[in-house]
Amino acid sequence: MKKTKGYLKLSKKDIYEKDFEVEYKGYKVEEVDSFLDIIYEDYKYIESCEQEYIKTIQDLENKIKSLKRDLEDKISLLEKSNSDLENLTRAGVNNSAIIKRISKLEKENYNK
Figure 1 (cartoon, rainbow, N blue to C red):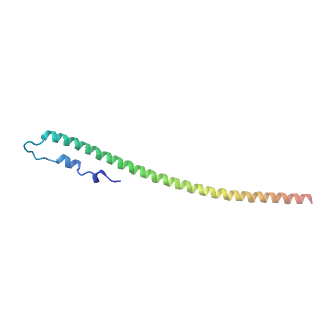
Figure 2 (figure 1 turned 90 degrees about the vertical axis):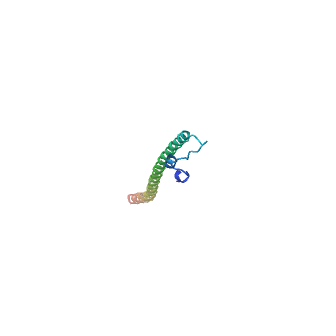
Figure 3 (figure 1 turned 180 degrees about the vertical axis):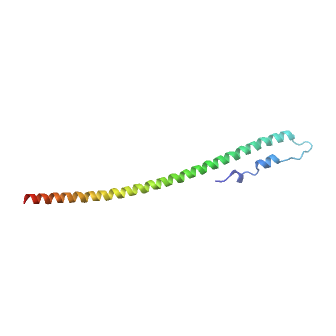
């Protein structure tokens, strides 16, 4: 993210400390000072907003990283659970086949 300092040619300090030469038929010093005071206050506000936005962006980036880690953990857990389920399903089929075979052998032994 680019900071406003890269875009703005003046800082609030530059505006605050700027002095103009007084010439005959020039601008009213009080009017210029008053206008520059307004600009100075605007710059202060812009800089404070920029700091808030930078902090908000950093907080959101950290939250995104945390959510990505959580998501990766959940995906890993789901993959492991899926693998375990497949193993249990195979084991269940094997157990079912064994039970059927035992049942068949028992029937054969009792029928003899």
